[in-house]
Image (tube, rainbow, N blue to C red):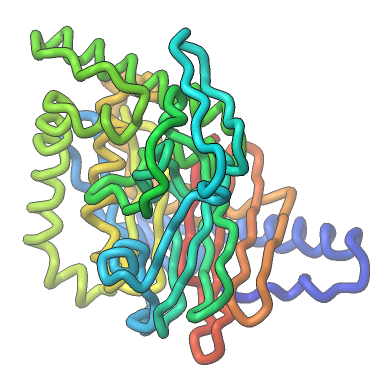
Length: 376
């Protein structure tokens, strides 16, 4: 996925024709059979047999080749060391307009709901993943897109989405990552593909409602009143349910760790209620291992909150189906955002899916860092 042969063609029409031709070729490759019930990978990744717990199924993904990613800094690492600082833009003036009528607060200062300021003061490029939650300031936010931030650069405007729709109060203290929790795929989908604050809010509210129903069915204390996605997911009933679902899969991964490392495991494909909905693939085992604790809990959160994937009793997808899901690049639209010498982020849109490919353009580190595929 690191090769982009049509980017420099002279006209948009030629680029579009080339993209469609390449997509058709990729689609045709998917049907090549290596044996009964097995699909030969059309790309550089191979899907292995899944691990299932309740209504959540996770397929490991291995790669023919991996890259050295030790040069990248993650958000958790950067904030923990103090080398990365996230603040609220415009937080120095007229901060708060509280609301008591249950409606969404309206900012009345220079501080903005969907924008934070980030400084990377480290010596390493910073990797940001869409869906990472940062808490602090007047609202909790979720990062809206994958990107790389150059070391020792100027402060940048960080595009985010609010995941705490009913609060616009608090101090201007530095933000911090939400330890162990990334927004679940349905929220990441709304942020990355829909790019809609209202849809993110709607998904957060739906998740909170599902958690309340789950607590009631379990005769557990209802989670404390909050509009915060982070607060909801930290409630006792959710933490217990997340642990019960994620822990067995984590233990299985630990047992398979040696084998998966030798096979260069770099990602996972996720199915909920028998429906293939998401894939995260990284450039190395190292990156997968760094993000895995957050990712597995986000997948489990998707499973327990129900989401739009309502197929109770559906069969676990076959490995061949998961392989086809990962390989299918039959896109009819491509949008590219790039910062020369830093990163390239390509958004590929197909009939019922969107794929994001984050590529590093950092000198000496030019390769695809993260691929996220989501069913719409």
